[in-house]
Length: 242
Ligand SMILES: Nc1ncnc2c1ncn2[C@@H]1O[C@H](COP(=O)(O)OP(=O)(O)OP(=O)(O)O)[C@@H](O)[C@H]1O
Ligand SMILES: [Mg+2]
Image (cartoon, rainbow, N blue to C red; front, side, top):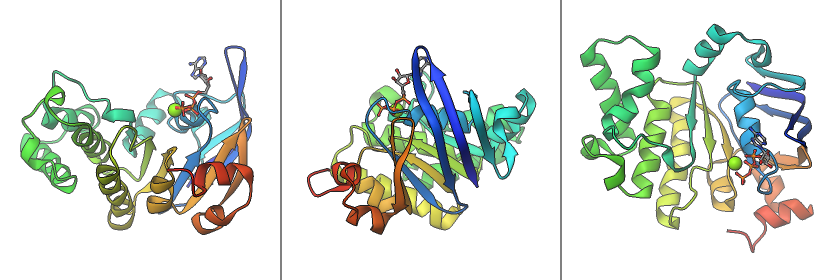
């Protein structure tokens, strides 16, 4: 379980998080929505310990991330995948080598095992045919799938997805949402998903929370949130949103 308890964080002159409390239960996908600049990515960065709270605690399976030393953080990050916006691939490495990167950093596997593992996740995201290609020559949807493969290659228990469908057409987006739901159901991965997309929230989320003024203004199951009359729920999940 991922928990933020009463987390406050000031960056520069702005109070970004102010009493943020959030719990992501094992095996669930929690969708975090909210206006641009409200602190969604900042929240994710607290979960992997890149940022530490000024007040409050961040816990993963009861262990306080905010109190971990570098060695403990490395161990935590082995258990956590991070899907960056647009995949954030390294242009001069092939798709295969991009996906292999976390394995080479975190695990000393024999070459054949490493190759098997990379091929396995590439098959999962349907990119096995593109292993030798380089990021500049593949489409946005393929880059995202490669980013997802890289996030999954270490067999993480948790994956943090920062806008997994930004800039994708609705058909590719739908495939990504199905993949995220499949990763939850078949690999039992717990997810924290940041998105502006109603389709993403409803197709792969279990619970949805909307961040405003430094904390969750409203939170509930997907069904509750879609029906909610709360203005933020209407704005992000109502009929007019995409
Ligand atoms: N390292 C930093 N130093 C100073 N300010 C920062 C830093 N990181 C983020 N911020 C500020 O914190 C605020 C929240 O940023 P964040 O990236 O979390 O927004 P977001 O909710 O993810 O928005 P978007 O939907 O546009 O991605 C922004 O005003 C941003 O400029
Ligand atoms: Mg962001």
